[in-house]
Every structure is written in structure tokens, then in C-alpha cells.
Amino acid sequence: MANSDKNIRITGNKNTATGIFPKIVFTGAAAGSSIITLEVLDDNTLSFTSNEGQVFSLDSNLSVGTIWSVNDISGVPLLRASAGATIGIAEFSGNVGVGESNPLSKLSVRGAFGIGSTTTTNYSVFQFPSAGSGQAYILPSAYPGAGTSVLQSDTSGNLTWVGMSAGSPGGSGTVYAGTAGSVAYYPASGTGVTGTSLIQIASSGTAVSFYSHIDAKTGNDLRLWNSGDTFYTAFQAGNNSASYNLILPTAPVGVGYSVMLVDTSGNMYFVPAEGGLAYTSPTGNRPVLRQRQNHHIWFAAGYTPPAAGPDSVIYQIPDLYIDGTSDVTYQLEAFYIRVETPSASPSRIQVEKSSTRTGAFTLAATGSSLVGGLGLTISGAGIYITNVTTFGSGILVTSGDLLRLNWTLLNATHANFSVQLTLAEI
Image (cartoon, rainbow, N blue to C red; front, side):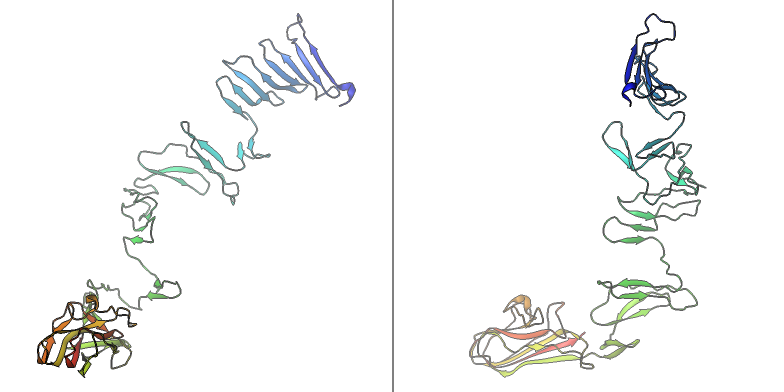
């Protein structure tokens, strides 16, 4: 700006010819396009013009029409506000950029934009994905029909509302929402949708529910992994030439070993050995049958304990005599005691089992006794013999269990005890 060009010239133009308005001429450079002239029009509108046309106008009328506008070189509004509180942006030409200096569309927004409610402060935010490449989506030209509809797009980005009616791509039928947060898959052929999901994934836990068959094609496996996800157990179909069903047993495995039998209809059953027989651990692809054995334990023979309390001798139930490694489970069959005494005073004995297989016994406690109650009480003079063959249900011992005698109440005159326990294999 040269000092000689600096000027603001105010001309009243009172009592001049029509079309000659009061004005202020703002000059900062030599006469030309840089000069802005402010004129007061006949209706008191303030009009800012350059030598190329009107730039900005401000109307004093706030009840009707345009209050103010910013125009292009031809006088077409680029930005204007009306008395009815309507803002016009690029109504007739040009594009609008929000966070974008070179908008390519009528409205270009760089970043997210929100749409708020008219009654609350809540709003929804929309944002284009970072990996997008300027795809165009064309909104539907009609409202959704009656009932439930979904929004569908073709490969050109045309969006349409598709009702859940017969013949539409969405299919037909009632589709239930399920529980909050769940995902359900429904069978659809393009012409129909049923109301019961085939697969449902719950919003909590790890349950996946199937309501139809699960097909593992081309000889693939159904794999169940161990707790560390390091190894799995797989189920796989053989190279069979016809389809058939195997129906799992409806009852759990009984005590001891069982084999699984299948009838001609594919029903499977767990079958224990009977008639005095027992199964050994399966060898190869067949179980080994053998005669059940009784196991006899001599705790004492002509023994006189020195004092009341637990015996220091602990007996461990052995493994299967055939291989020396397989476990065997027994139930109590008989508890036999013989004692010689001149006294009528009582003595009591109970058989106890360790709760941890490490010798941790609960002293003289009824809960650890294999003989009901507080054990077996002996009284009387002479040679006294007692034999117990009835025990509580579910009293079992297995290879590795530890047993001992507990002389909870001992009469010193009792001597020459013989104590024997018979176990029956199940």
C-alpha cells in the first residue's frame, strides 16, 4: 500500500439524481479491483461492491427476505441468511468443505460429524473408515414399508429398504431378536426365513447352540482341545459306504470298568461285567475279562496293642495283580475280630481310611471310619469272636488308598487280637 493511495472517501449524495446513493469508498492501493465501495440503497440495504460486482449485502428488514448474503462475481449468493432463520450455503453453485480445503462433493467433511436430537443433548456420530476410497452411497428413494425392513446395497452403492416379506431377498417369517447381545443365524433360501435360529452365540459365557445338524465335510474332524490348547481329541468318520447313526448312552458309566455295546438301531449302552467277572483295563481294541477277586487283609494275628489310639501300621490297597499297575476298586465284605480276654470290660476298634493318600488320618473320627458309627465294640470274657458283614452304602476303597486300625478304647486285659478285613472286587 503506497502512502499516496491510502484513502477513505465518504460521499453523502443528498438531493442527487435517482440511482446515486450515499457511499463510502475504501482505498488501499491504486484504483482498480482492490477498491471496495459501501453504498446505502433506497431500502436502507448496505451493499458492498467492487468493480466486479456486489460482494456482500446487509438488509435492515428482519421480518421477510434475505437479511445478508455473500455473493460471487455474478451476484449469485454463495452464503446467505433469511429472516425465517434459514441459512443458504452454495445453493446455486460450488461445494462446501468442512475441514477440507478442496471439496470434491457438494458437502465434503474431513472427520466425523454428529446428528443431534431436537429435544436432548444426545447425538449420533458418523465417520468414514480410514481405508475407504471415496465410495458413493445413494440413499433410498422411498420410505420403508410396513413391518420390519433392512437396508440393502447393490454393488453400485444404491441403498434400498427391503421388507421381510415373501419373495424379497430378506425372506419371510418372524425372526426373533433373542437375548440382548446374542447373535443368531437363521436359515434363508432367498424366499423364506424361519423363526427359529440354527446357531446362536450367547452374549455371556462360551455357549454356542445348534438347532440342526453339524456337518464336518471331506473327512474333517470335530476337535476337542485340552485345557492348555496344546493337544486335542478328534472325532472323524471312517471311509464308510453308507450313512448310519450312533446314539450315545442315556445312563452314565457304572462303578468300575464297562464296555459299550451297540444294538442294531445304533443305540449305545455302557455294560458292566456280570456273573463274577470283571474287566481289566482295555488292551488293544478289546477288553480283557477275568474272574473277580476277593482281597483279604490281616491287620493282626495274636497281637496285643500296647495302648489305646491309632496303630502305627498302615496298609495300602494294592494294584491289580495281573499287571501290577491298574487300579482295582473294592467294597467291604466282612470285618472279623477274635480276642482272648478274662475281663468283661469293653474295647473298641475301627478301620480308618486316609483322606489324602498320604497318611493324613482323622484320629478316632466317625467320618473317617469304614466301620459304621464309632467302630466295633468288644466285651465279655473268654474267647470273643465277632463278624460284621453289613456296611454303609457307597463305602469303597481303591488301589492306593491307605488303611489302619484305631484302638479307640482299649482294655489292657484284652490280648491276642486277630483282625481280618475282606474286600470284594466290584
